[in-house]
Length: 239
Image 1 (cartoon, helix red, strand yellow):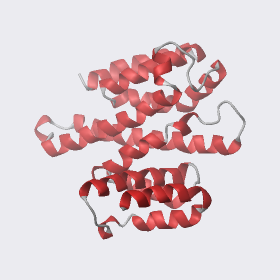
Image 2 (image 1 turned 120 degrees about the vertical axis):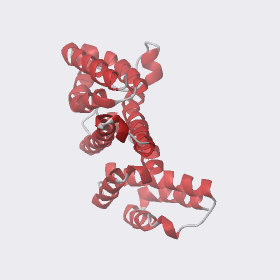
Image 3 (image 1 turned 180 degrees about the horizontal axis):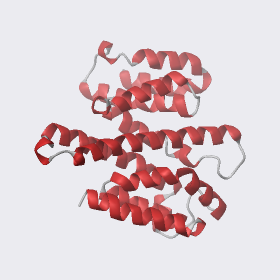
Image 4 (image 1 turned 30 degrees about the vertical axis):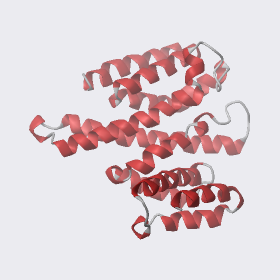
């Protein structure tokens, strides 16, 4: 029942955005919901995606308020945040090949949100490693592990948005086919990629290095700086 409700809200959002938004926000009171655990978990995943869409595509400020609250209590909202990160993928590269102002604004919101997720989780990871070893408790280690997983989930979306399989096989990517688009994409997200290089896991760094190698013709010096930073800083942090 809950999964069907989430699917209905997804369909209704395009036609009845305001009414769907009001219902979605009301449903965030999860303590009032009942159902099998897996259905509730799937419903929470759906709600996360819906809230992200309300902000990125429709610029509903109350949705951003919810996202900020989730980021402030990440341990309680991993289900929503990790699944919702997927929905940003297409918006991270939207509009580079045209002059559609609506897509450009949505892309900017998506990229800003992605930076916020990466920055907040990187801060959590750095705080853990800064602790005295005797204070690195199992509970704190668990939170740092969750932050690392969310950071990885979010940072990987940049690589897959451009076209991970295509890049790996040396084929034309599904986005940013022209050097000029790659330059704009790199400029728009330089601080995000740099923040990934501060604290990300080896797997996330591996994907990030493949992405910036693809972007290298657009700005070799910037790519060199990002690669060096990631290998020296995150590489050292995670040993």
